[in-house]
Image (cartoon, rainbow, N blue to C red):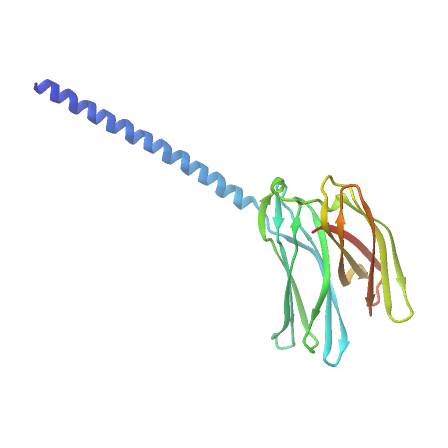
Length: 235
């Protein structure tokens, strides 16, 4: 009888030992998975500001800041969802005159896109302007309708200067991707001595795969410049 109890006790201890070992292995596997996930997150790189610039226009109570920026997603595998460009104008004392967040839609892995628009400076002329990018969310490219800018071909562009300080920009955009797009953002950047001095953006709607559409943008009081660029991104 005593031998039977002794054998039963030994069997119980062996079972507990095996269970403990099993738990230890699971904990180690879980730890490894978490480490791999953490390492992957560390490898994700923030949105990069390639170039930016601006000009100030208007007088009296109507002061406007026309800005333009080019940003890059340096990640090879992850797209960026809802990245943001923040524009902040300050006076000579460092006080904020105006600030605005411009949210983009998607930036494909390794892609570079541009955007430009205007900020109302509330009747004050800025002394300094900061243009800062934020990455937004990192997403799998296969899970979103994200088209690389290289698949949106901009051609036949023209800059037509009018008689009343107006300038028209025209061209055509072709969707060379396999994806039908509800909207495409078309951005014009004007440069002086290779530096951005003006930016504006318009939209072309319902651009299906393989289609080509014409666009026209009318702007007033565009500052002096010696070159311009027109690019597109899915929206």
